Image (tube, rainbow, N blue to C red; front, side):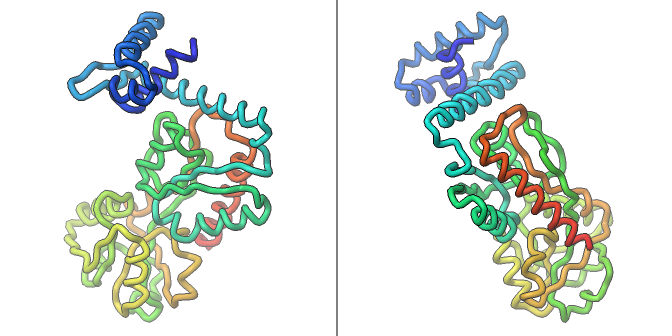
Length: 304
């Protein structure tokens, strides 16, 4: 398949518009339209649905986009290797994760990795779980570390660890000595929770609904730092979070984590994701292995 039609196709698929792709490629809209039509004719497949608001990929188009993205990344890696910059001495590693992983765990892991590979540099995109997977799928990031309930087409799960939800509270809290808790135990407690839309809040709301419990949180925020600090500076507020997320800070701040035993709050996994079928640059592969080792260690410690 010729590079020019593939490049035009990739631009239209990414921007969702012939005019936006033409502007990006510095060519006429008619030239982009002609390349797309010729490509569809050559393949004997419809790659886009022409809609009033733009171009929407069909199922064959989605498959071709995955191929085109991998192809462009491979070319980029080969050029970098030929120029001698894609080595263990220098490479920018692009990551995506939700705030829970960006708050403490991922900064520690990246800092420790740079002790072994000082030439490594990082871009970290802090986004929601669904967006992290999408960024991996489209090749915008090398690796995503994200909470997930399902698999995503076009994304390879390199590692998956159970990530059950626990209750975070001051060590002096009356419930702190419990071995485990259920949602019903939190009915009369002031809670600090993330906004709706996060995997944690989604599972919590399901657990409440199934048990016929209505809990209105005392605090809501999209910021884990805010929620954590509310618990830290209070005497009675409880938050829900993953154990890997805050386990490095709890002892220092005189907080404890008590596991939640509701089945709905034990369904979540913490996944390391990469683009399906993509050959990662050398240093990215080294970091991927290091990240997985650190995650397995952290998960084992929190379980113990």
